[in-house]
Image (cartoon, rainbow, N blue to C red; front, side, top):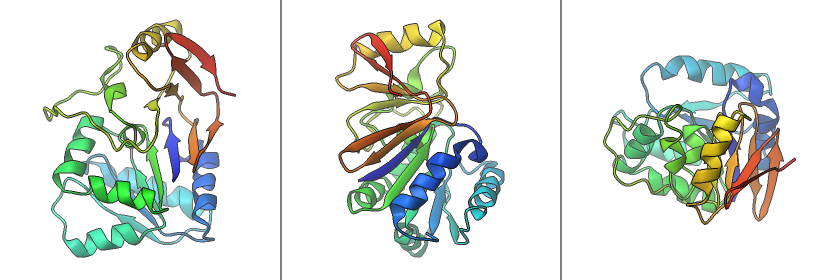
Amino acid sequence: MKLVFHGGGYDRDNRELNLKAIELSGEKKPVIAYIPAQSYDSEVDFRDFVKEHQKYGLRQFLYFPIDYPFDNTLKRELLKADIIHLSGGNTFHFLKYLKEHKVFNDLKNFAKKGGILTGLSAGAIVMTPRISAATYPDFDCDENEVGLLNFTGMGLVKFEFFPHYSNSRRYDDELKKQSLKLKYPLYAAPDGAGVIVEEDKIKFVGKVACFFQGKKMFMN
């Protein structure tokens, strides 16, 4: 599989990760589909996404709002894309509608068959085994306003992902504690940093920290 996990930030902050996704596609001008975590106010973010990627020479984009009704024709076009990008937003809302509108398993199969799947913040978290990283720390977590009970993510990787990481004792104490509950490493990436998965290889962009069994180390 070929996956890109973005820690967050504006599109211009993620140039290296964006270019790597394009490279992984093997296409000079890949078609990119954009799925917002929620459709409300997402058009502005989509325009910024398009504007940034046009700088790389890309011209074909598809906007796919997950929490609006859609037909199978649009869904087929989504799955024909070379790259599918899952945006940031509320993780619980995103996962609820990915599953409710039956796109969740399609995206898993898309990635397993060689499609490039990228995610920023919430979009990255839903690709992991569970979306628990959206529930902590108390001072900086998503609100589960949709009442989601099943936190199972796509499980495309054997690690958890924490976005918008700040290298501070306040965050570190919480992430060390949470890592004791996990059987996989917890990678924490600040805005502009991230993780690239290419088959069985993992590459880290920016200052990504790993929390495992109560300990912390930087990966690069």
